[in-house]
Image 1: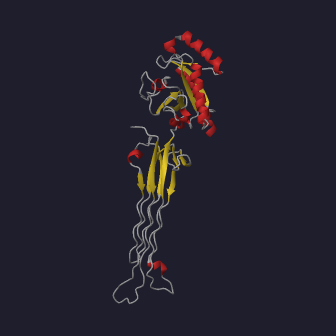
Image 2: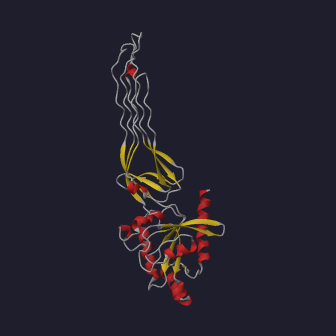
Length: 334
């Protein structure tokens, strides 16, 4: 299934049905009086978060959602039927934004969460409603009240426990494919990953979800490259796993580049718990990899783990460190 994480849709609730002007006409009943019923209520519009969806791709092909109108009132004091409500199902983690694409109206983070977004119009009154002691034959009825219309943006932020960060070609997809059952595209060129991938990791008794997003480049927070619009997918995570290619000339510079992008982006990413790992240690060898790790710590003040996804080196130790942050987050919730 193709991944889509934002979409603009147009939503309308139903109009109320018009009231009816009618008079009772029966043999031997000389003064039947008004008997026009009220119109039915228009359909409401709800958003519901469900956990069986993980993309907004359906909203690329269907962008207009309109609830049905209430039915007309009828004679014999018959009220028109109210229209069924329209329920728009979205993935868990979907934000509903105003048309300015910035104001968050609702944030749907739990499966089964359901919110009333637009109310349908009330039905109009039939002439029976206007009958009184001084007006026993009213010919007045009213149309139904109109529903509401609104254009909104849907933005999906994946629900994951750990966010995977790094420059393009840092080995993120390879790592994800080794430690989870996910099958991301892997190739020896930048920007192999064009959309976020999710994978489930099991470490000891802990099971957690890792989100891999497209590689970031310098200036990503300003819209450069592919990563800027995907940083939102790691905002909800408990921790970040920052992968840095140990085979490049100055891996500490690559690390600082990403850290600066997190700081400029905001959203609390810069202050999240972080585990740093130098990848592709098998290509450099044990001795050179450790030398790079030592220099990395001197340059950044951060002690990295040295791993090789291909060789399976030090992966279990890394996953155990990540599971500690996930468990800590769960304890805080409880």
